[in-house]
Length: 319
Image 1 (cartoon, one colour):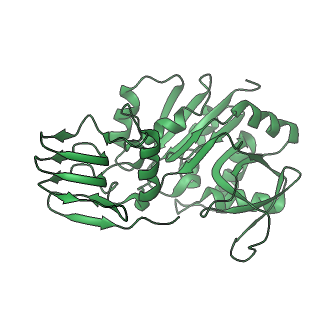
Image 2 (image 1 turned 60 degrees about the vertical axis):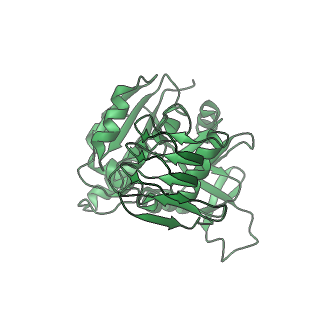
């Protein structure tokens, strides 16, 4: 490791795009893949073992804290409790004194709902140091969603709307950033000097995009052999579960399933109960649901079952 870095994982939001799975459950603690792994575990495994990790939590934070505390981790983890939910920048602003002490010279900001495999953090940091920049954005080949960026000689020169510039060579931002800590803290403190009172404070629009316009910001292009996805909507959450399980069912060890239940490519989340006679295909069963003799599922729709009596069909979104 060239320099010690800190991993910062903001994990306090409501996860509204994953409703109804997150109606009473924190998104980062949702099941993902085999072996009782949770979404946040995939962000943790990106951060080098010699690094320290700071995680901010809030919405149903007790559930997430319980998961973090009961599992052994290679890194030293510090939990910060958000007083209110006001996006990543707001989480950092309300904890400015703590992160000033906890962050090392460089900080890797990783959302708690992303799957990232194969990133060479050392190489990303080496490029960051060689360019002498305050921020490096991890980018990938263009996706149908997210922010679009243009790059010149390894530096980001513009953010733009793809619909307005359909023929411009572009990359997609992953929303994963490597900061020189002094640069990040200075940017947040400037916001505080401007009178920030706890309102919404988006890291991308308030710090990342203005930095692109006013200073040199580097891009680190994710190698094609790596994998990245934002699992923040139902379709991508489901697809990533099935990818990680090679198409097998994913069943929480905290779920209760009676004999006589038939499942095909189904994700069953914590404390769900499936009674005898239930037949499901391509379905997510939300936490705390109780399902009696339902027979649903087809190849055209992703189905989400939730509550004790309700059955909801959720069309797969394209993005």
